[in-house]
Structures are given as C-alpha cells and as structure tokens.
Image (cartoon, rainbow, N blue to C red; front, side, top):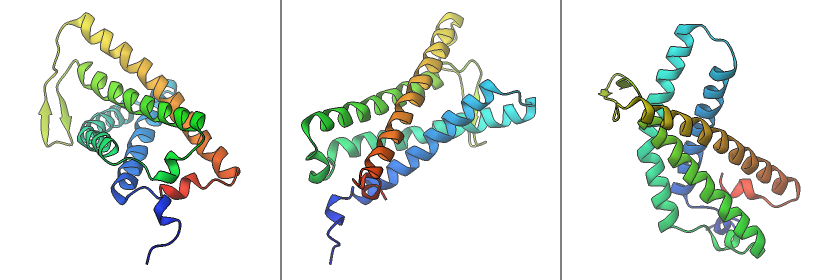
Length: 174
C-alpha cells in the first residue's frame, strides 16, 4: 500500500541522482571557491584540486544520466500543477542549473593544460593545446562556476522558502 504523499514524490532514480548531483556539485563549488579565496599549503591545494578534477570527471556520465532521466521521466503531476508563473520559474531555474552544470563540466575538461589522473585508474591527456583557447575555457569555467553557485544558492533559498510556507518541496526529493 502506498502512502498518500508517495504520489507527489519523485521516483527513486530521480531522487538518487538529485542527491548525488547535489553532493558533487556543492562539494566541487565550495571547495573550489575555498581554494581560490583562502591560502592553502601547496600539498593540500594539489590534493584537493586533483580530487575535484577526478570526482567531477567521474560525475560526467552520472550527470548525463540525470538529464536523460529528467527528459524521459517528467516530475509528478502535483509538482507540475503549480501556478503557471511558479512552474515557469521552477522550470527555468532547473534548466539553468542543468545548462550551467554542463558548461562547468565541459569547460573544466577543455581548460586542462596537462594530463590528469582519474583516481589513478586512467590518465586523460589534455584535449586542446592552444594557449589562448585554454585560457578562454578557463575564464568560461570560472564565470560558469560563479553563475552555477548563484543559481544553486537561489534554488536552496527557494526550497527553504517553500518549506517555511508549509509546502513540503524537500520531502518530495527525500
């Protein structure tokens, strides 16, 4: 027997992919900006940088799976049944998160100047070699990370606002 609120929940795959994505994206954003803002000793910064590169590279197929799953499996009807302006805003915000995440992941790989290791499993050579192109992708990576951090922050604030207003948005993703 299903619980009355189960119909309003996202399916298990959507929920799992959401929380994996949230964990990876928040870790990479926060640790990356932490490294950019604060002085860290070189071994710590190198270790964190290598870990983030490997983690986000491994995350790429998970992200693709998440996007495909979202396209193939729309959200529950109760979520779609928001007021039209709320539904458009929520849809636009989620599309922006997906697009910015794709931009961050792609620019991150394309800006790499040196081969990088994926947890010691494989060594990925740089895909580009032109210095100007590499610099362009590095700037794009920084800008898209800043924008992603802003939209993710707005997303979290919107969830908090809905929770405080008595609309259990978070429970649908748990």
